[in-house]
Length: 137
Picture 1 (spheres, one colour):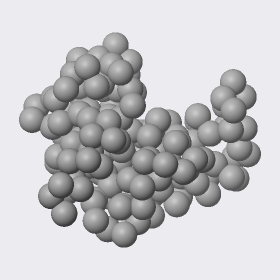
Picture 2 (cartoon, rainbow, N blue to C red):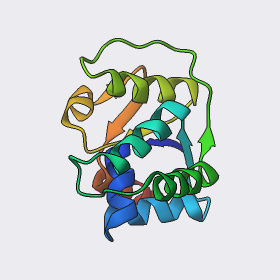
Picture 3 (cartoon, rainbow, N blue to C red):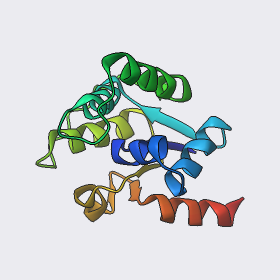
Picture 4 (cartoon, rainbow, N blue to C red):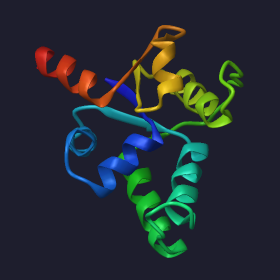
């Protein structure tokens, strides 16, 4: 199954144990195809190095994390320009899912989750994804 993992979920998976880490481990084990874009990877780096966030990684450390994610993911070229959300990064998540032919977006972002789906792509939480896929495995 092809999935876009939103940045908030990736950060949780990187720094803490729990369901987001279980999800990322599925990508590591190639049980799911993690789809991302350069825009989303750039957002990840920006958040990791921002001083108003708790991570405070150096550029070098953040680059290492981003390259690790790049190695786990299929990085797709974004051609779609979606403008349904006020937050431009939410639109980029939707564009990535469309251009990456994802079955779902896994996110903790309430604005995305409120959509429920977009152009046939489900938008669900990590817990919902893990619960639904556990039933089918």
